[in-house]
Length: 449
Image 1 (cartoon, one colour):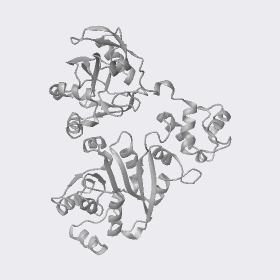
Image 2 (cartoon, rainbow, N blue to C red):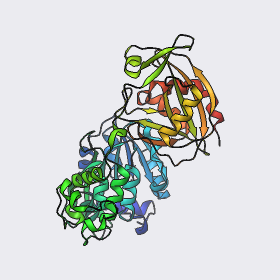
Image 3 (tube, rainbow, N blue to C red):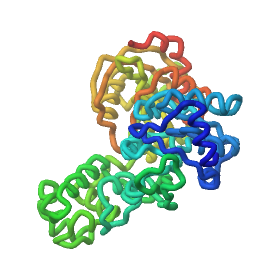
Image 4 (cartoon, rainbow, N blue to C red):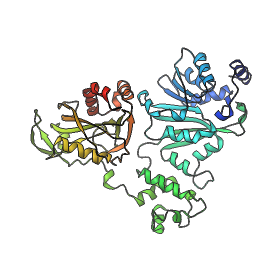
């Protein structure tokens, strides 16, 4: 849409740009098409667009065949977009992007995030939409130039700080190009820039304690001019030893440490240890016959390797809103790594019974206890991996302490969103969970509320 067309259109629909909403409308058509090309959009893509405005990016995304879900705060623009793109693969939500629940999009598969983010909330939006776990696999965003520089900043630069490390520890951040203020109506007071964020590949960076990493960088950058060893004395009392281990100077300041050095420092202070090593293949399981009677014991590797019948428990935890807690299985699991699963689950060990195992698994995997009730029993079958499964349910609001090595992440989901997700993308889930879900589906309508 050309500059003259935007001015005329805004008068026609009686919209005056609202500064408090960060409304600056893009009128460079070539730039809009370039953005769509950078996102490599096709008919298979699902695009989430924040702040579509008059549809400068929406149009090229739709032309590429993508399905677009746009979040727009201005009611007048919502009405315009719905009318202007009527009949196309566009859904427009009238609302505040900061209140949108990103987790509802898991059912729509990997998401590409596009947007000309309002400058005043761009960092807050980024942290909210890209916080793990997230279904977003690519973000291509226009930001205030200074914000883009901070996100992509290298060590020893004035822009390098907490936000750069938080995002760069999970994403590759690329500063693509500067965008002059002249391509917008009205013109903002500063230039903009495009950045691309793509998730880092598994194993690209060393595994580390995420919470400690965040605590260290917050403390380290709390006083930029002060030596980091003095700021981190509580965590690393022997800074000389720590600095030598990560290859840093004794008088280094926070901005002098690279991302890799911050991760190395995290692991120096708190090594992941055996609790992050994954599955214990020597763990002894109870082995049972076709009637679920114990006939002996065998190590995990033998039980799974020979498809021996054994026992397991699954637990569905709900919060007061009736949402179901799901866990994303660790990448180190010997079966179904990185798939979504029941709130907690585990095998019945040698000499254990179902009820005791359920209580133990809940405590060990999530760090909580609560009353558990039996829901249903699933027979051993190929789908369950030859497991007899007792399904339990309980209530808990959290917070949870997911076991390292067992769980990548936990998240509450509305039951209707889980149902839609399973219907569209069943391969995202562990088979045992799917069996429990189907078995308990009728009772899920009576979840706690």
